[in-house]
Image (tube, rainbow, N blue to C red; front, top):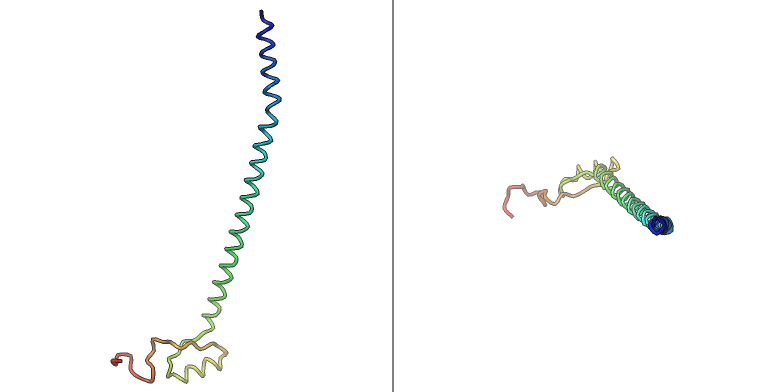
Length: 104
């Protein structure tokens, strides 16, 4: 009478052992896919961060070497050019020598 239960137990253990590698392989494959996906995401994020930093630094370098001058301030423009800096004409500055508070 104990034999059918013992045989059933042995068969259950064998079935679990036989199916376990498949389940493990699937989870291993899933983990590998997830790691590869995560690594790809990190790489993309790092490149985006790097390009953003480079663009920001380039803009700051350009701004730091520029000098704002009014349209009519030729002395400012000449001095900036002599110093090797880029001249940026400030559109908010009065044009034609008109005072800033004068009506247009």
